[in-house]
Image (cartoon, rainbow, N blue to C red; front, side, top):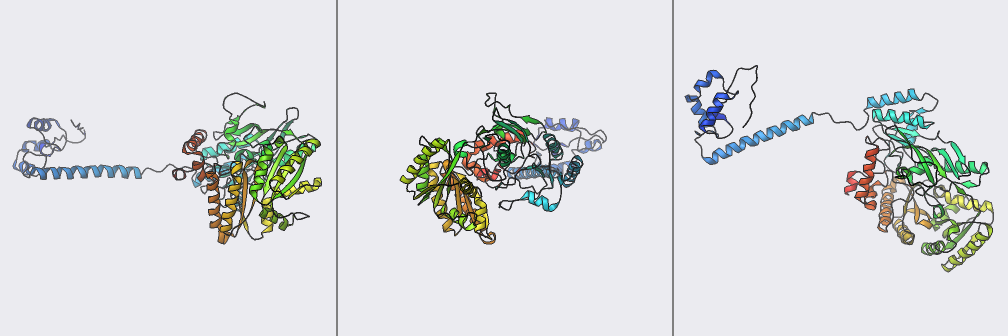
Length: 579
């Protein structure tokens, strides 16, 4: 039965039985006539059987006196209820449309308030920057071709406590935080957000806090550069070094964020090995966590250090790290040249699987175009022969180096090498290796006026010749100039594609896309060491699978429910997952 409520401030009404929205019996009509509180005024109750009531009943499809056919009655009732349904739906939609949307990030007014609070909290010189030109530089890179935007403010903390204060202000006003370290990223990791973001420049946090020689470890702030750390150890006469060696200028925080590696990876592994013993991290909540103690190993629960390695600043801000160090060993540099990449890689596989493979500290591939670029750039005193080339670092005591060198020379000769030689002096060895490390500079210097898109992928070592061959063929068919360098010992290589930005940007973007798809199809990865950022996140679902990506996003939402830590990076959006 429908419940009808009496409105106390109005005179009592009763329902006229002829307008009930359903067919009723005589008993039901009498009941509603006596008790229901709407529609008929009491003074007119006596007239309900009058002529006017009878006339009205003739036209009501709910009345027994309706003169139309049964079909007509049904149609009229259907039209009535349809109109009623549409009316209610329209009302609900109208009400919902008037509900103000929940803002994801700070409004312009809230952003201004946050900036004022940051300026008040850090009044020191150059600790807070709002110059538009500086904000643009911090939000984009000359070597990155992904979407970018200027930040709203740059803040330069000096301690973990400073970072906590910044994070708390950002969380209060829902302002995104984008960490910035060495500025060497190539995949848009530190791009700003159009809604306004806080760039956290960690360059002031570059101190070595302690060195434990007996334990072979070192604790530093996250803005310290790996080169400076090793230089500090040399200057203090400590025969230890930190073996992860990505591009020049990279800092510990960025190396953690991207899960870096470098030329030493074939011997010492990557950031995902045990080179970071613990991390100090400021979470989005403002809480500070230290992931573990300094012990070399621990079986206490999750390895929370690994949560942040490769997370690209999306789970928290790394402020300190304890690094594991390793002894410095004597090393010599050798060079071998081959008629093609396939023969070079085959030689490397045999060398690494031999009894002397452990003495190979580095083995790097430079293709013929890269060797030509080094010569043309004029960065070497004596030009090198232009051919696909391997550079080796062989480490150990003198006798071990000699034995390993003999084995390496024998193997490369069997695989078609037509030239093998050692660097004759320490200076030549250092120069040779520096030219490998400065491959990007050499490529740009040799091709003035052109831009360079640098990307990296990694595949199982046995698949590397196929990948390099197909990539060079693809680039040649597109009339794109390129150089290739690679950590051939672990299947990781970098393509440096040179182009005219006004005419060839789309062609280069397509070539990079095909390269990544090609690597994944060979059971590889879209990035070996550059990280995901904005540029590679569209490939994660294809590489890792939707369930793995969902797990990553679940962890992200649990730690950072407001999504203020470097948003829009690393995790693919829903459209990319579906695609």
